[in-house]
Length: 388
Image 1 (cartoon, rainbow, N blue to C red):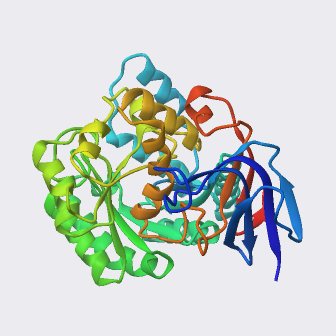
Image 2 (cartoon, rainbow, N blue to C red; image 1 turned 180 degrees about the vertical axis):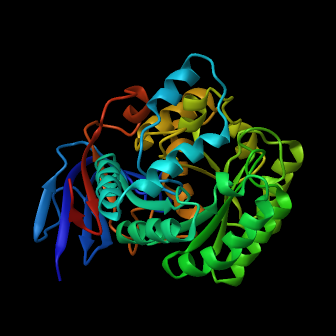
């Protein structure tokens, strides 16, 4: 048995209201004790012993971020497209095809090296649990390869063959949907926990999306949906109807979408770095939260619309642009992400939870917003082991 103690914590965020001050369960002058990868106890500073002791030196410690929406496995660069958007060109979903061409052309070794580097970057940014989607292959062989590489990096792999219609199927999208829900799903499902679909104009309509999701569910996968990013649409209500774990983007929410989310088990996952990068309006998170919807924040790290692994950046945007309090945003990036993955073992630092934490180079979690753009994660702990 091995024990890690993080001692002399000035402000420990447990996300367990029974452990400390609400709403984040804050404990001051604390020590976090981890044993065999799990949180064993929260004690007063200076009173715990372990095989390894890390001195937090009065800094803040928070649960590791849970990033429930990323696209880390890809090749190619779309900086030119980004520059054109900053000059006024509108975002279009068709840019996915540019990355698809580069990804299909890349070797497995190259894709693995690129994905590993992005995962390491995310870990340094305090992301201890991460979901990774396929979706830049759009053919059976490449989608399978992307799922294989993602599965080397996380248990939370999502099959997203229905990310876009590839050029070779441009005039017969329904045939591509048949491929996705048939041969492609059969090849990828054994490697995945989830299936996802881009239910959006320029991608897949409601019935095509339903067909993919129902096939994924029949294959034993949980459901996720990209919805309501580019305008009002059926994505949110389809996700709720099919009891998807999450519906992501939610930039445009009609009253009926809010009503559908309230009382459902579907988490509305906001991706504010995407709206920053695409110059879209920011979601009205305040409205969704006040209506009782469960919410999460995620990075949506991808080459076209959100090339960042900084959850702190997303938190700052959510507070500044989406009407969330700092506490709500931090909860959304930890417990919210865990809920979007239907996990109860991460996103908090309560006894029995996985010992995933970020030590901040700051006395309080408020610095995540107070000092935007500054890399404040001094060290990351995963499963009770100091990683960075």
